[in-house]
Length: 334
Image (cartoon, rainbow, N blue to C red; front, side, top):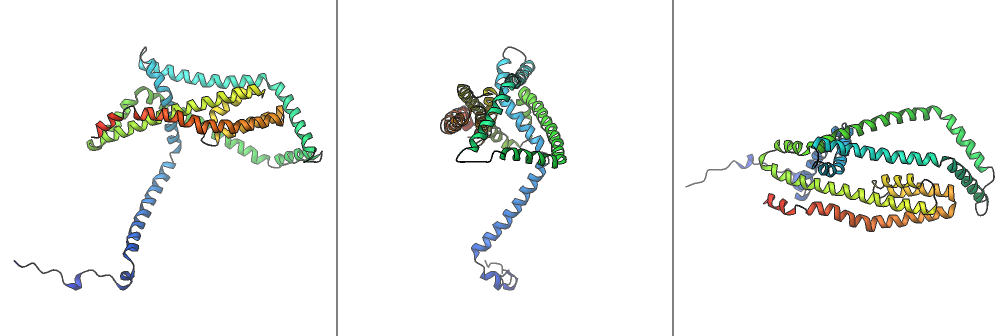
């Protein structure tokens, strides 16, 4: 049985002389390169579109963080009261706790305002005198000249400062809007998150539904564990800072401890910045010696946080949630 004749040799595609001289590796790399460029363009366009909804994305993310914090409390209360009442109690309790902390800070600042003004004035005078002494030897009128320059600069740029303040007010409205939307999302996530998640999984193909549910469930458990862990680390840092500042006699120990708690949520730089503010307060109120002690405190607490708290707390928090249902995950994937 004879094979059918193939196409004539002239009909077969040939490489011209220029293409034949290009190595095959380079041709393969070029083929991958234009595909990668196409993928990069698609990703860039996707992120550009998502960037138009960044406030919504931030609000949803904050809603998930609030849900991770409030959901265990709501689940505990739901054993004794109906679920809607438990969610409302958990949310109102969290808001009252935050507002109470802010009220405590305001009351502390108001009570110490008179004494702080005197301490700060005396501290600034003390700093000026030290800068006039060796080895700095600044002229006595250096600070007066600096003050006049600052006043002139503010008066010359008054319109810019006012426009910046107005812009800051609009930014504040945006922040409050995002927080309101985050609370709105957190209420529904905490109350009926399972139903919303089940509806989302039902939209997927049957073949991918189970794997997606298992993977996303593991991600949520890890996210919850990380949120609880960072809260524990931040609270520990705030307690350590508050005790140390109170023992050193630095004013505003409670507000500075609360600032440390909030700054601990910013990785790497948050805690040092908060303690730097505490060092400035200590320098103006208690002098350079106490300020140096506070700077040493920055180093010590940074080492404790980075080499002790984070490894232990995060491995416990995220690891316990991740391995809690490892056997269930493997069973689902088999």
